[in-house]
Amino acid sequence: MLDVVVVGAGPNGLTAAVELARRGFSVAVFEARDTIGGGARTEELTLPGFWHDPCSAAHPLAISSPAFRAMPLERYGLEWLHADLPMAHPFTDGTAAVLARSVGETAASFGPRDAGTYRRLVEPFLPRWDTLARDFMSLPLTALPRDPVTLARFGLVGLPPSTWLMRRFRDERARTLFAGLVAHVMAPLGGFATSAIALVFALAAHARGWPVARGGSQAVSDALAAYLKDLGGTVHTDYEVKRLDDLPPARAYVFDTSPTALARIAGFGSYYANFRYGPGAFKIDYALDGPVPWTAPEAHRATTVQIGADSAEINAALRAASREGRAPDKPFLITVQPSVVDPGRAPAGKHVFWAYGHVPSGWTGDLTDAIERQLERFAPGFRDRVLARATAGPPELAARNANYVGGDIASGAVSGLQTLLRPKLSLFPYGTPHPAVFICSSATPPGPGVHGMSGHNAAKAVWRRLRGA
Image 1 (cartoon, rainbow, N blue to C red):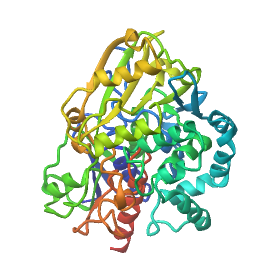
Image 2: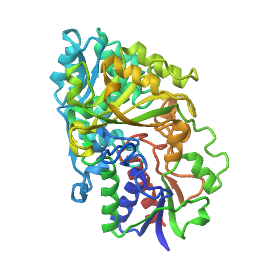
Image 3: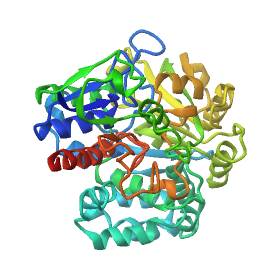
Image 4: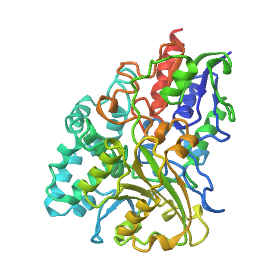
């Protein structure tokens, strides 16, 4: 009998498996797809020689992850690549606000009226970032805060809606960049704890950057799997689990799946019936004949580029997708251009590029024209550079990754109390009605992103149970 079976070979499932194998437990991972990776994969989606990331591409939370930083993943091929700027947010006048590694350069991009405000906002937390990240991404019941004073101060700033935080700024440049940071988790700007979301992304940029993995996001998953195998764990692909009886006997089962799938497989009925999924994404992967022709020079120096003319336009796009049930006319876009720092991702002189906008859950329309019209506002002539494109709306995203219910790449709405308390209002979010069954996906705290901390936290709950038994 195995000690632990993990279902799902995404970053969280693999992290949970590694953490348990490091502590001497026998572990096997079962993945329905023919390759591992979940939200961290790399594939030739358009043309031969163009290597795209079907989901996550830039990794501010991965490089800051306490779980990943405690593992020797660089020995297994993971290498982080940094552009000159972690992120740029261009405007229609050809200028841009930026998130630079330097707080001063970032503050200067907001203009003189907001530079001091920004410094006062982030500088108290930056020296304690590693400890803050560990405390923020863990639960009190899995790890006591190492710096409860700083965490409490962060909570005072972060728990209110981002609209409150944005009132500190006098000009639109800073407000727009912060609105875009919140939109990375597809959350309405007025939502609970959305200030914390924006601050975490900003602090991560200053402390560690927003890198891409050399060769693509698959490198993250491959490094975790290789480390697991060296620890004695096994990974089985092409193994779809429809019920618990499909799995070998084990002392514990850990699911890197959506709550919906876990309830179906384990027979939990309506246990997760109140879990809410958020809006979907419409994503396009591009093979380009050259770099994106951004008007703003700063955008050429960044791996991640946010697209939204101002905070009002971003808010309107979020409201359309999440509350009004329609696709926005001017979608807010998150774009990543990995080949700016990793030219091996495309043939010589060519580039890979992706962009996605928000749409209602399960939406079946085509957002391609709206996305490209939006890109043309900030990069005139973009369409002329397109060699091929691969589009994926909510149905396609859900087909590629069953955790993306309705195309929700955040694996659950990041709004209301569900921002922090997911998948249920519980002090033990990784446990389930069955004492031997656990959940470790992005539907659990600390939520979406390639960071492995949901798997790390769930593994703690598992090994405490096994040790107690």
